[in-house]
Image 1 (cartoon, helix red, strand yellow):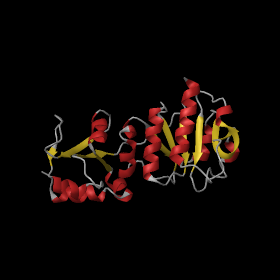
Image 2 (cartoon, rainbow, N blue to C red):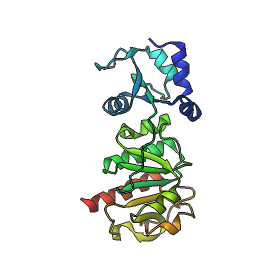
Image 3 (tube, one colour):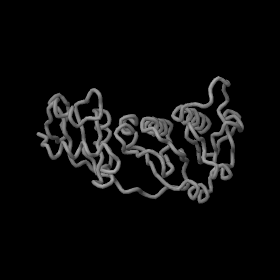
Image 4 (cartoon, helix red, strand yellow):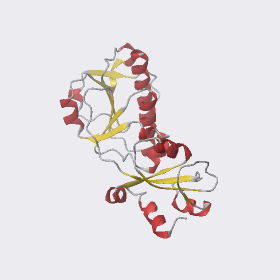
Length: 237
């Protein structure tokens, strides 16, 4: 069974500051935990209700106690305590989805899931982006967080160092459907509110845009990422 100390620890990890201090994060739900189990991430403990159908070693937790530690409106059978891995080195020679200033954890999770679906195994975020181990990010990724390398770095330095063509998503540029994407390449998108940072725009080698109507100011960042990844995947295959 779970004790009060463990409950307090798990609840504290809902805050980024505590996740950093403890070097731990939490994974919830059957799908995410199943993907976690088959990954290289180090699991410290798993707590599950008696209706979780798995032979993996775990501690029993009551529905009531699961509700006390869960970030979900409807807790989903199992929760895991995981050690935060050290950030590896960015690979400068593979296609990367680069996000400048993503603030919504659900958006980041969806972007990671999208990148994974289209075979892009590296997502690079600006240092001011939301934490990839935010519970909402992990949940929205539906397990893709454990299959995709997600990095945080100074994007200006990274883009200068990379030798790959940089396709930037702007309001004005060549239609992505008229653009021949290089393989490998960098797909660069900015936040919904500010777009790509001004300091990064001169580094873009190919200014591109998603053609559409004029009834709204911008697309959701997750939707834009999906469109870019889809077109890149279509051309590559």
